[in-house]
Amino acid sequence: MSFSARLAPLIVSLFFAVPASAQEIEVEVGTNLFCDTREQVERFVALYDGDTQNAVDGVNAAEHDPSACAVSTVAYVRGPKLATARSKNTAFQIVKILVIGVVAEDGVHAVEPAPFFSVITVEEIGV
Image (cartoon, rainbow, N blue to C red):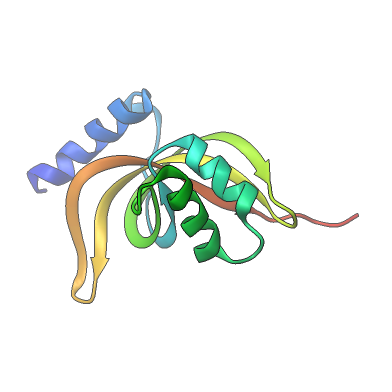
């Protein structure tokens, strides 16, 4: 086992303030929204009307930072659910995540773990 593979559970446990032995760590790979702050994710949800890039552009313009939020394909560990937020037609859970790799054409490349905030679409069932 490589040093970074042994270090990952410790980094995750420190990031999420949960002992490594108390949780099973699941690395996910996917294309998601990643923002620097929870407030930026909340602004994304408020702007979201079905067009992800338009909402991202709106947040970045308001922040005067072209990289405040982005959509990218990465390897990450999902942290705690922080809140539920609703746009016009969609409900989202706001979560904290720890990015540990980026996906390129030749595979996943490890990066220094970095915290971000994201959203997970909530499946709603009409009654």
